[in-house]
Length: 447
Image 1 (spheres, rainbow, N blue to C red):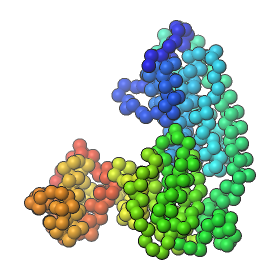
Image 2 (cartoon, one colour):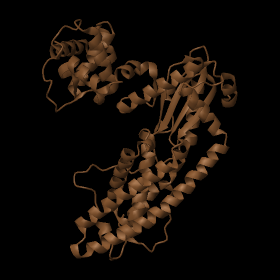
Image 3 (tube, rainbow, N blue to C red):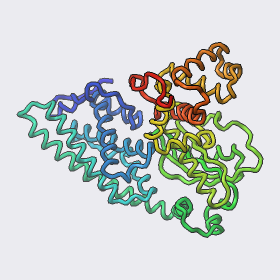
Image 4 (cartoon, rainbow, N blue to C red):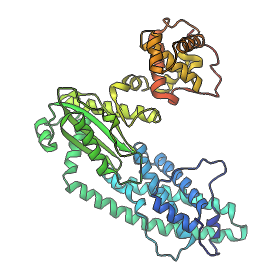
């Protein structure tokens, strides 16, 4: 869609564009917001705003780490910085227009209040973003605007941004305090505080805590962490329903669901003694929702441990998001979770054990998968061929080629070899060597 504007002192705003060679970024704002901004400014200034919004979010987290908290909170923060950057461009392009601070730039406030982040940190984040946005606009102005006109444009940028930030800070403060009050008076505060104490290993009166949470703490527990990759959706309600549904389908008789942000919830359920039926991983959950499940544990310590298992599962899923499904159970990734606690050390281990097989390439991956299934099936060529849907001779060739690249007999370091293969299978590029890196063209260092 073509932008509509008349010539004027702010024409340089319409000539903004992301740097050459910069990979295009996916917008964090809603499709409607992007369409409206593109109609007014044009696609290139909007792309510039998306890139700058992403950079602002990174700068804020670097300067005020408490405002981070993982991929989902980061996307919420990025939506706010992107919306604020777009608003600033629209303001500079047409200062006389009647505009209000966009709601998308305020959504993170509710999450900050619920996460008990101090208002001082929120306001410091605004100041950091203001300075970074001012610098980005000044730099772009210096590059685009002729020298005789720069001083006036610098003045406009400074004046309009100070006015915007003053209004924005006031709105953020009001929203934060309102959300904080709502949270305190809703009863959610007491429940979330109780869960926080349990997860932190603090002493609680188990009977009183069970009554407050309406959830039996002395039983067996299956913990789930659910989050949504879509930062534009108001996903809190959908996430809570989805987490409760998954737990019920896992055979849980009662559930406890605690929102931990706009795009994340923690949940627990008390499963039946009998194994659950069904295949939860294949249920048609809303696109973008993912679930990390812990192990079934018992009692108050089990409530905490199952949640920690789920957290480790989240970490594994985020290390290799392309290869894990929407529902992942801790027992299925337990080995990868344990060995990836020190990721740099694991990368070295995988590289040393697998040699050329540690390359992140299609050919090396094919050999790794074949060798892994061959070893897991007690060296049965027939079973491995069936699972891979290839001929038995193909498995024979691949295993022989893999052993040549390893440079030693498969029994020499079998536990280490299997561990490296499992880590590569689950974590993928997070522990593999880029294909172009030729540092291990030959056999493994262990040979």
